[in-house]
Image 1 (cartoon, each protein chain N blue to C red):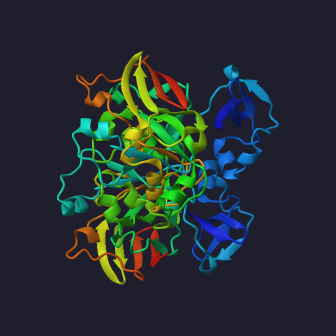
Image 2: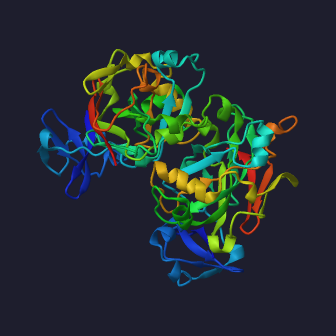
Image 3: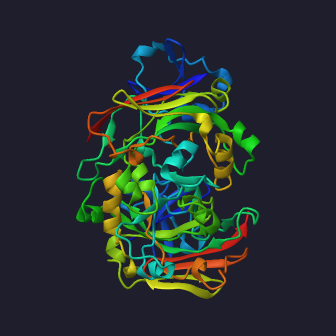
Length: 275
Length: 275
């Protein structure tokens, strides 16, 4: 099953995404659907059905209670940074103001703030039910689904100090969506390809099975620290191929179009504009 | 003027704190009062007045949209770590689940999770009005007030990777309060003493004027990255004297009572219990 948050004349609505249409649900967003736990009742939404081509996607979870990000979590990306494989996940965070929809423009800061804009295609875990101090089996059961994210990074702000968060949470720079795919449909992380394409050049191309710390481990680990709630997001890290470690550091220029893809979920397509 | 969020039989209420009493306001918490911008109308609350001795304090802002923390921001603390004075603030974050009231118990994790519990007395800036890409004068005008916080830290979780956030956001470990003091009453950061006392031993003793990056600079800096909203919190950093850098690393033991004080604001008093 696929769930999305879509924009409506009245605001937003959760929706079940079918092959050619979207069925609106009695919930403002996917977070509310997950919190209600009423998956069995889905498809009975009273809001009507609209053609998929007419759907405008809101970011999947407009206001998560927490957004976590994992650094250095693909073996290939760890290798390009020159670091050793990590013993524990490196965790930083984003604020909800960073989030945008699957086809929204990425809002680059003015050049006077930064010109070091970089891409990071990521599998994003969506928490489905409240979870605290969970073992990996309990953690796995708390995963509501998977979606696509791009942890767009402002590298000079990220690397000015030891702490990366500021370079990772610029407002309006992190697309998430277009929909959540439930775990039974997505399956285990394995051979699903994850790619990032900048203006038709494939710059990242890996499989999500290359993750060092897998989704259930990450949820279990974070749940030792704090309760996770339905709709909370975990950006699980990015594979190799970012601009930072490429010859000449080819940062994103205004007007670039970034496509972020994961097999079994779908695509984000975002144009980069200064605003 | 002093504003607090207090617990009531129905939930929580914002209140003006007078010398011997609290006047309840028509707002659920201080964040709502700040967002309403109606400081001129305060004191006209219809909820009645209760003796200060009967007040039970909720954490000042129960659900901020963002909580920022600054590392290495007192010259004395930078010196004890052996680092050079920073050129930019090192910024990490907390999640709202970390926050507790001024006299609540600090919820230590079980010993199997960590025994490296440490204190960090901090001046906390409370955002009063929405602010984005502000210069320092505009940033200063957006400060709603100051309060006391303790950025209680779980050092092994903080220092296992380069990223500190996990060790700083353990659920129920970060007291904030008891009230906000408006800038006109608190004055400029200067000779106000900031102290932390563990079981009657003074372990930190400095003045907030020793801050490397002052409140207006921090607000301006963060506002280049994202909008800040009324009720957002900035933990501004801690002076020297933490357990991490003391002989023998005297971590907090269950049952310890921690008092965190700032002149012109007041005190947090929190007992540490495993739960």
